[in-house]
Amino acid sequence: MFKKILPKEYSFFDFFEKVINIDVMMCYEFMRFTTQKTNFEDYVRKIKEYELEADKVTLECTEALHKTFITPFERTDILTLTKRLDDIADNLNAAAQCILLYDIQELRTDIFDFAEILNLSTNELVTAVKGLRDLKHNDSVKKSCMKIHELENRADEVHRMAIVKLFKEGNALEIVKWKEVFARLERAVDRCEDLANVIERIVVDNA
Image (cartoon, rainbow, N blue to C red; front, side, top):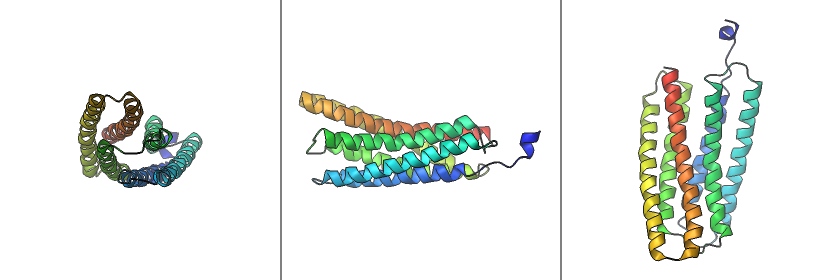
């Protein structure tokens, strides 16, 4: 009874929106990166800066959760949303770092397909995350989540074909390098779908 009359802390929505906006900017930067022939270092450095910013906001959100008594929805959902939003940034940064560390001189066309999917997915997540503020009007949230699921299926096919092409070429060193890059990008897309799943559950639980 006492908990019901206490005000809920809604600043978590600000944290969610800050991180997804960082993710969007990272994906845009990564998409620009995939069109370049040289100067990879500049793009990788910028992507790393965004990743560190996402880490900072994620830590602030987690600390706020520890200090908050009443939350707008389940604490476990807030933790999962926070972690998955940061995971997108982490995996995208890891993919970019691999390209630099492995001294990859020429980017494969498949990487642009991944970049496009991530760009579209994170933009759909902007709509879905913002929609958490008003769960009574959730049609746009549901549509965005559905599109994210479709994009994840598309990413699975891109990943499968990319690996097939790698093995057909038969260069063992290139296989090792690019398998890691593609795995990181696929994980970033998977985290987008994980977020869609959590958001859909929150919509159902709070309908």
